[in-house]
Amino acid sequence: MFSKTPIAYGLRVVSTLFPVQKPLLFSGAGSLGKLVDYMTEGGYRRPLLVTDAFLLQNGMLDGLLAQLRDLGCEVTVFDGIIPNPTFAVVEAGLAQSRAGNCDAVLAVGGGSAIDAAKVIAAAHTDARPLAKLVGNLKIKVPPLPFFVAPTTSGTGSETTVAAVISDTQTHKKRFFVSPKLVPIAAALDPELLKSLPAAMTAAVGMDAFTHAIEAYTSRNTFDDTDRDARMAIALLGKYLPVVVADGNNLEAREKVALASFLAGYAFTKASLGYVHAISHQISAQYNTPHGLANAIILPRVLRFNKPAVADRLAALERMFDPQASGSDDALATAFIARVDALQDQIGIPDRLEDLQPADYDKITADALAEARVTYAVPRVMKKPDVQRILEATARGERDLSFT
Ligand SMILES: [Fe+2]
Image 1 (spheres, helix red, strand yellow):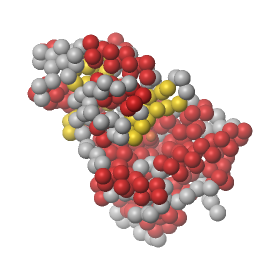
Image 2: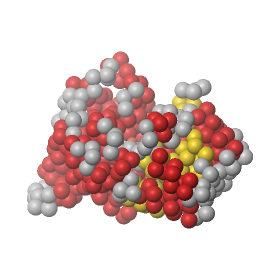
Image 3: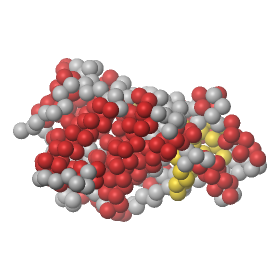
Image 4: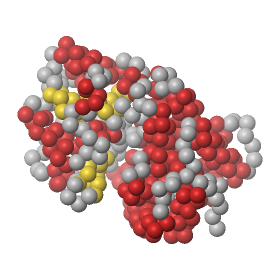
């Protein structure tokens, strides 16, 4: 699936010239402890623990702190993480990291903690101001060794090359993108994930599902991204309903976390598509949670993309049902119906009532602009296509056709 469109070509060059390493993975109950053993056996004894105050205060990190103490570590705790972390948050963490003369960074938290920790680790070793690290491949000095244990399963930040920090002066998100931001090692510990509420588990799980689908249907695919995306889709199809129904099912929690990790790797190399291009604008306009916005938009974009990727969607249907037979178009249609059923099963609504027709022009223009410069999409949308998707999303119409 190699396209010579400029963006697909550019992505291919970047993916080839700047290969992305996967973090070393520890998985399963007790894997946070194994991650800490690995970190300290590497000689790191003065970690900066980046987390949020809630996790610290409710005792979820007591065992971790005791283990670090027993191993002779001097831990500096930075618990100032907030949703959509700002430059001020990063500066505060950086000040603590420097004051503690830290030699590693350990992030335990959601995507916000992991993103802020990435930038703290990079800024600690670089004398330049933070603003100089913003953008693509601007991080020149190796960051502090960076270790991570996510407490949500969806963003994939534990394996991606990017960190997003909010700029409160311009009201814009700033992207730090570099292969140097990928953690050395990650722990997917279901004990850290089991308290995530069902609705949030469903939404962030569908974010991971969307990462995998958009990576798999991108025009910048590789053998390893295809393999990881397919595995993520299979795991989420099987285990996401289980974990939404029973958050204490640790085996299912681990499988969903693994899927998120694999999907994160797949999209960081293969790129995303129109689901994210549209959902980013919706979230910016209405504060809709990212995973929920993706989940609701996904079935419409799948239907738009189907003519260009029927063979790929048919292959996914055969993965779920090896006995399935029929044309690629019929099997692709069956796969999309499978996605609809998954969404219904885990309680994702079929409409987004916040959408206001007066905002459609701006959402459409910004979504098309984001996709044009960022993603290797399989089929190019025009303005009426996005508007049709927005209207259908406001009405709760999933099964729409495109001319
Ligand atoms: Fe996402």
